[in-house]
Structures are given as C-alpha cells and as structure tokens.
Image 1 (cartoon, rainbow, N blue to C red):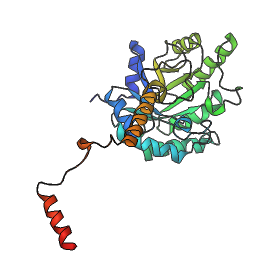
Image 2: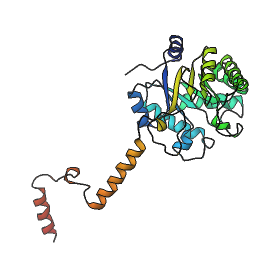
Image 3: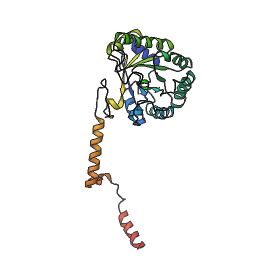
Image 4: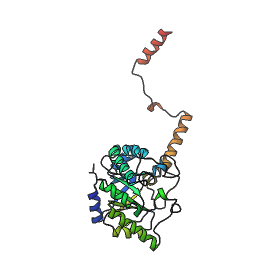
Length: 284
C-alpha cells in the first residue's frame, strides 16, 4: 500500500511537474476501491447532496451529514489524503464558525484538510483556519454553493478581465494560507495562467490540462449518476447501465424461477432429512 501523501509531497509534485489525481467519493466501499487503484487524494464533497441525497443542489447539506460520510470514507481509505468539504453556511457566517467546523472535520472524521468556496472575501476565514493549524483548500471560479449569484452554473474567467479576477482571488487566498487552490469551470487558458502564477498546487475541475491535479466525481467517472454529466468529464465506465441491466436480469430470473438455482442453495447434512422426516412423523 502506498504511503499517504502530505502537503509537502503535493508541493514537490508541482515543482517536478508530476500530476496528481483527486476524486469526490462519499462511502466506505468506494473509498476502499479508489485507494486500491492508487488515487492520491479524495474529496468528500458536498456534491453528495445531488448524487447521494437527491437534492437539487449542494446547499441543503449539513455538517453532520458531511462528517458522517467522511468518517466512512476515512475507514475505507486510511492511506489516502482526504479533504472534507465545508457545506453552505458552515463557514460563511463567521470566522469562528469556519474554524470550529474545520476542527470538527479534523477531530471527528480524521481529515487531512478542509475545503471552502469563495474568492478574496474568504481570505480572513482561510487565514484563521490555517493559523489554527489546519490545511485549507480554496475553491474559486464556478462555486456551486453560490451559483445563484453567478447566474447559474456558468463558465467563469472566460474574458481577460474575468480571468484577472480569478487570478487575483487565487493570489490573495494563497497569501492567506491556502495550501492548494481548486479551479472549477474556467477556460483552460485561465487554469494555466493561475497555475503558472501560484506557488501552491492547483486542481482542475473543468479548468484544463495545465493545472497540477485533476478532479471529478467518482460517480461521473464511472457513469453512476445519469441525471447530468458535465462537459469536462470523461467517462471511463458505464456502471449505472450495468447495474440496471443486472437488476433487470435478477428480476426476470426470480419471475421465471431460475433464481435461486441449486448452486445458490444450502443443503442439510447427509442423513439429516431422514431424521427430520422421522421427527415430523413422531410429532404427528
């Protein structure tokens, strides 16, 4: 089993040009499988609001839900760097809330870092979390928790002025103490610009190939969430279709009597049926 990466490892990877991979994962079994595959970083993301709970977005997620799932992921992936995603209104309300809820992730779920959304207005929160001894990842560009302010889930940083705003946010948050910056839904040119200007690593969620790491949802990667697939996702499997097909066959075989067959049934020990019949006769 590979040794768990540290913040220093990710910095060295940026300096050497070695890319790293991150996935959003929400449960024990998936975490166990991705760790076995050699994944270097897991985000327990509030995107589980859509994928696991069927909400219309990420806003309804609570700290208790996030910690519950992160505990399961940590049990499944003890040797993977895990980031806990601070949900809506767990950090925006005050710097004290930001530090307290980040601490809950560390104390109750064993994360290696936390993540929060927002531009330079989040610099004081990031500084306070970092000053409290915790690693915090900044998330800029398309920020799903505040998508309504952006006019919906739209590409950000796609003009020269907008790209400069993304860059300025990234530089301010790096200065505030962010150990890594996640860029979501920005053109590849903006992703490259920010990556070149920052000392800390960047992660692309639809921000092009030049960021230091790449991230998507595991459910998107393997075709488990059929409701919507973003443009930036490459599907490596169609697990959802396979599950639907398998369940359809299961239902059909139950209806036909083909399942369970003899190979799926247990048998009594030799001679015990005769004894059972004698017992039944005696009872009669």
